[in-house]
Image 1 (cartoon, rainbow, N blue to C red):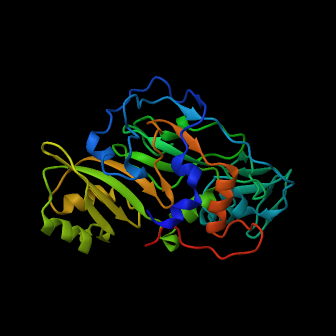
Image 2: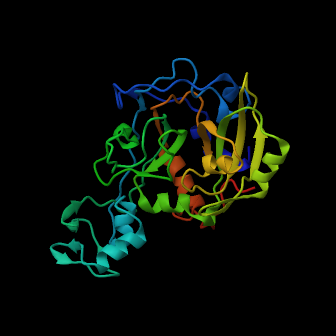
Amino acid sequence: MPNSTRKFPGVLTRPPRSTRPAGAGRRSPAAAPGPLGSTGGAAGRSSDGPGGGRGESTRQTRHQETEAKPERLHKLLAQSGVGSRREMEGLIAAGRISVNGQAAQLGQTASPGDRVKVNGKLVQLRFSDRLPRVVIYHKPEGEIVSRNDPDHRPNVFTSMPRISAGRWVAVGRLDFNTSGLLLLTTSGDLANRLMHPRYQLIREYAVRILGELSDELRQRLLDGVELDDGPAQFASFQAAGGEGANRWYRVTLYEGRNREVRRMFEAVGVVVSRLMRVRYGPFVLPPGLKRGQVLELSEAEVKGLLADLGMFKSGADRPPRRLLRR
């Protein structure tokens, strides 16, 4: 594992702390097969092991708060989880955001105590002097990463800890039938940075297919295949064992387009029967974090993450570095 994973030792190694019910009553998907946990490394060990049902969440951490200073409105709304900075600028330009009853202007600032409304709805603001919260969620199959679903399927946000201001923002997505590591934060600005191509954060998946994959097809996936939204290629491709007709592989890539891993295999005539994300940037799916459980980063871990992304200054200034780039 690259050295930069040491930045978050607690995230990678500690078991979930005290638990509380979350999303009780939902049906639990089947546990992952043995070969996924037998390939070695923290990313693949028994996170779907015996007894790995749903319905648990870790104790919430309390971050210290200081007196907040005025901030640019579009940035403030983004870090409060309302949307991206660009989206907020668009809403301000369209006259859909108000501050203390007056239409907001581009470049305007807001201070603690200001009443900010988006589309007529009052927003609880999260100033940058307050550390955002960040959690790792072991998403099970059968949940959607969206609040707006016409089919009213279960979504990941109902399993998140309650927050007094803002809302949880997902870092990327996992499709309905994909399980594994999903990061969520209360800061839209942080979420956008974690997804931005500039930082080249690696995504690693465990993939199960029917039958073995020939060396020729494997090389095609490494060299690149053409999808309907452009070329795509894996950064690495490794066999991970399997029994009977099923075979497991570990693949990595540096982007997160919609259903990209499944579509890449389909492009070479192979259907994925099981897909699980086991790593995102410096975060590995922690051993012992069961399906449906949430693990929250500590204050020190959040500060370290913000510092690496150039969003937090601690002691001497240091430039942001790219996390988990090979």
